[in-house]
Length: 68
Image (tube, rainbow, N blue to C red; front, side, top):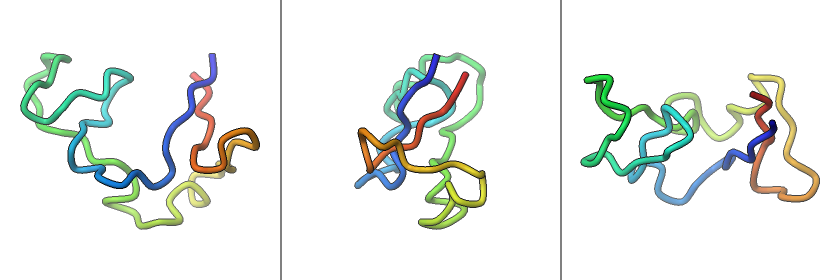
């Protein structure tokens, strides 16, 4: 299954990006005891997806497709 993933969301700090639930930081549902997982743009910059070898999704240019 392929899932679209935003390349550069407006407010990445408002969500946890650690799983496909995309919870708010104060409502983490995964229960793993950890804090919020940063979006790659927060830790690696705006071109993060190129370093990962990903390309924008042709149907949604603001997203990359992650293959699970």
